[in-house]
Amino acid sequence: MPKAEHITTAISAAAVAVSLAVLLKQRRRDRRGSDAEPLEEPGSPRLSKAEAHDARLDELNTLVLERGSANTTDYRVHVLDAPRAAGRSGSTKELSLWHDVPLVAADGAPESSTPTFNFVCEIPKCTRKKFEVATNEHVTPIKQDTKKGVLREFKKGDIFFNYGCFPRTWEDPRHTSPDTGYPGDNDPLDVCEIGLRQVRTGEIRAVKVLGVLAMIDDDETDWKVVAIDAEDRWASELNDVDDVERLLPGTVGLIREWFRTYKIPDGKPPNKFAFEERCLPAAYALKVIHETHESYLELIKEGKGHEDLHVPGTGHEHLRHLRRDSSITKTLSQAPVAYDAALPARVSA
Image (cartoon, rainbow, N blue to C red; front, side, top):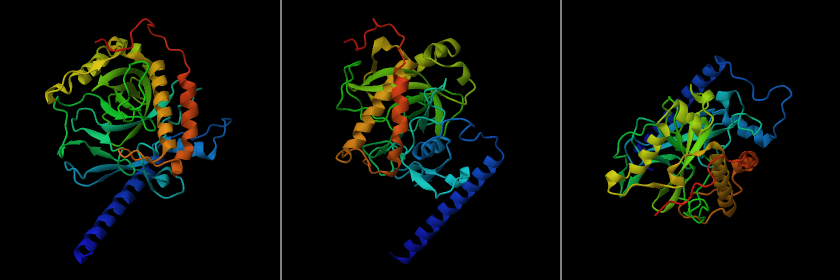
């Protein structure tokens, strides 16, 4: 390597080290000044070592690291687990936003009255750059989507909610949904977070699930979970889609219209929705979460062999913690679903 490149590499490494040191120092200072509760309450069931690791990740002790220049195809958003920022031992490690971040948040156990899930934000509200988890890249960072080498934005305009996905889920394109009649779209499960706060790209937030829309896009099932940040001003009052309609009327309809029409400026037809366009309740959304998590588990068991996806396989370090996600989502999915059984699932011709 030429001398100039050695110098450039050294400067870049030093800059990253300084940035991490500053972020870690700030996190330690914030933590000393916070009144955060301990992970375990006296008398609470003890977590296994693997489950405790997952729960600590759920505490969101992560750092967002940007690499490359913004507004270029090289730009990536990575997330680091920073144990020292949380007062834990261990070194800083880069996380896969798809594989390493637990699906169920720390307080998301079945006995909780408000089960929560980890939401990975890709596109902050009031923005239009089309960021997405790069499921085909090592450690699956977030990148700006491209089409024919050109960075993509929503031509429709800024999105009005925080948009992202649930980790450790997958909409299997080989499986046709019995509810919609269409296969999955080969992506993690999409989430529309309707809270007041703008969430940063790469930020992980615990959210409450409120409902789900069954969008059909290019003859693929593309579920859209409606959720709210567990710390939002409205979170304590919103538990299901009916609460959203009552307290924030029009919100679900606007989300549906956004997704129905956002491709029209690109010359494509409007998207359709199953179930006569209804937003199904939280209990149904929990079933969708469980099903897409089960599909993800099958993908991991298969390991490599998916050219368009980065699949670490069962030997990957953090995947030993999947047991907690699996058991909790299965329990939550068994709740009865209250909705009009006569409602047709399939999209009418």
